[in-house]
Length: 144
Image (cartoon, rainbow, N blue to C red; front, side, top):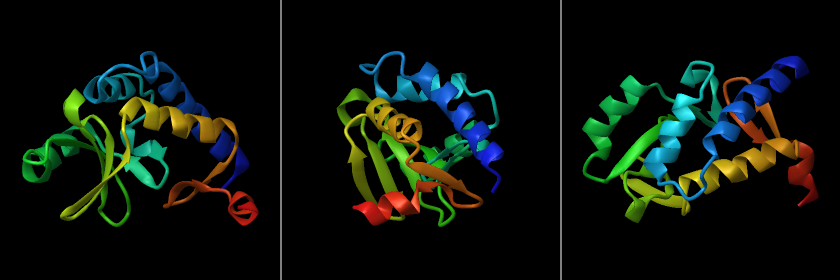
């Protein structure tokens, strides 16, 4: 993947994230709305780690079929069909990784999750790999 494409992708994501992080205190659904409202590209071109944002139609269909009872809103999907989802209210407003029948909270707040991702992008600790998304740079993994 060319360095230019990777830098351009990072700029698009950073622009969307910057505008979405206006209010860290906002609820997860509000932060999610801000993210989608500020996108300048189709959702499928935005990666959050190895998850690709899904469009609003897929979000609605997936919510109705699989997530309504859980109280989670799916917003991104990886190549294995697993989802990132956020709680639909302040009580359950964290970010969850959802694999079939299992869900695991990965962050207490959607806005904080985006802010942490943004910090990794700014520190140049992630790189884009075609079909895999934004992954931790191999030299950073070796240093740990």
